[in-house]
Length: 92
Image (cartoon, rainbow, N blue to C red; front, top):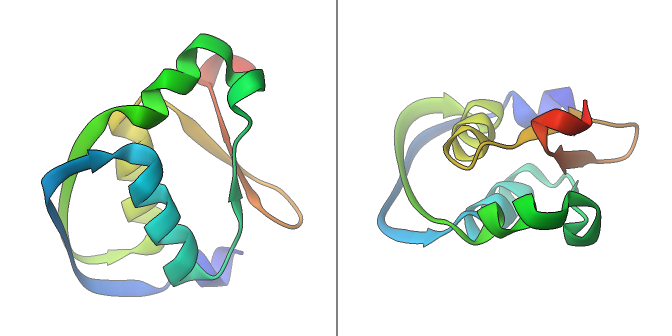
C-alpha cells in the first residue's frame, strides 16, 4: 500500500466541484488499492463524503492527493493490511 500511494501524479486537476467520495474513488482506481469507509460507522460525519470539493495539484504523490481530499472534509486515513480505511479523527 505505501508503494502504491508513493506513486507520483504529474497533474491532478478537478476544477469543477465533485463529491469527495468521487475523488477518493479516482485515487483508489489509480493506486489500485482498496479505500474503504463505512458510512454507518462514521455516523453523522459520513455526510462529509458528499461535500463538493475541488483539487488541483501538480507533481504530487497519491498519498498527498488523498490527504488533501481528506483534509478538506475533515476525515483521516488509516492504513490496514489489505486496504486504506477512511475514519473520523475522533475514531483514532
